[in-house]
Length: 618
Ligand code: GCB
Image 1 (cartoon, protein in one colour):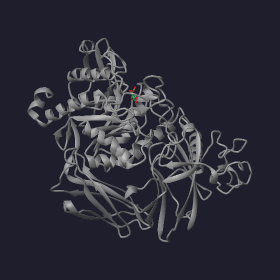
Image 2 (cartoon, rainbow, N blue to C red):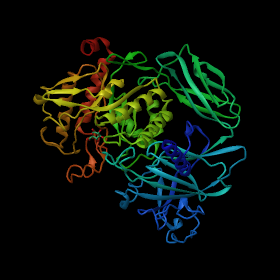
Image 3 (cartoon, rainbow, N blue to C red):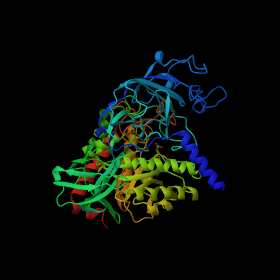
Image 4 (cartoon, rainbow, N blue to C red):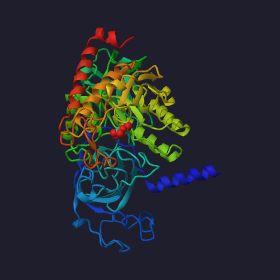
């Protein structure tokens, strides 16, 4: 009985909150108007626009009115007559607020956004209000009515607004709160800036009454000769003929959705050009029903492991990677345009990478599309980072939802080869259960990609040991390794005494290594923070790693210096994590070239299987 009451109250809570709905696949491929641009804003540290003076949410008041979201001042209660969107300053959307006004640099709390826009809704069409991301908890109001809320700073969410949209001027009000909380995902403690606000694009999309809401078109698991996918239709007329057309591959197949609007399909293929970093071939894929059509660009490749090998299209690869945060150092702040994202991936290409770790949370969908186009394999991740509330079921549900959304959003990207369920999570029973469940969930949603997590190592004397039990459930032996920075002197004579004990017969992909240097600070190689120290650290790393049986890739930490509140050193850091190979002013440090040389050698070695057999395959 108690359990039923709990479930009932949870359900009522869910209803009263009005959560966002599932988002449409490929928003960029839809007819839409952009709601990016200048939005008026009000800083509201006490949340006066949300709670009345007795701390009761206006959302729950009997009239359903009050609060900043009731755009027409004064409110029914008159408390908010001091507040006026019309004469308030503006923020750019997309964009975090911290980078847009000096007083917002460290701000964590609530900000209200408002913008007016014109719409001309047509009958027979439906309208979807889509946010590509807002950090962290977002409440959305259209023309004074609440549409719902969403939690999670890096995944898209959407509301259908067909019934609320007016012809002519509309007003949209959004409350965004980036307060850190222990039970959220991520939790209170991270090593990156807690950029708040509407950080990614906002769209108002127009779709037909019955439309293609979701689809997957990918190779079947381990089978280069079969395309495996599904189409999900949304609308009244659910049972429909659907054509999947890939003209360049001579594929045109028709299938019919069932009463739930769903159909899965398998299409045999004879000849395909497979996607790879050397040849990132993308095919135009058209999905067509009687009332709707959507076009995507999709690549086809297989990814698998065999013993200690990673096989891309059946061929052994070495992942020449680099880790990247979703931050443009020149703003500094969250990237705002495709050019910002392209700049980061172009730097990775200059390092001769074929792989990137998009840490520590879902990156912009456009970033993964660029990786597809530019030929970079991707490790994609959720912000299950450090000390999450392992025993809280709501925290788990939240993490699982972010993981499912990450996979749903990017499942058609050939570039993505690895889903990561978290980073440096400390071993305990509850954590093992939580993380283990996430691994199972990821596999149930996508059995074609590798599942990983960035684990931790421990040391016994001069033995480096990787034996985290979670590793048994993962496809890779991946761990963060900071020899030379967080442990050991980093000198070769010290490091060469260490040996490895990785207790998994799996490909080893070192998910982090590195050390800090202030660009332009030159000293001898034993002086911390100097470029020479960082360079030495990388060189000694390569020796240490050469003793690691099964090494199949790495993502040193990190491509570019990034802002972090944990890094206050006034001389060397000034709130920047300096482990970047490129500084916050775009200057390449010495270690950039050291890593590039190493990758040039690894590329040659893997292009020439004779060399590779000599050294790597025992
Ligand atoms: C780590 C974390 C990463 C940090 C990095 C550091 O192990 O995974 O988020 O930024 O170390 O610089 O300490």
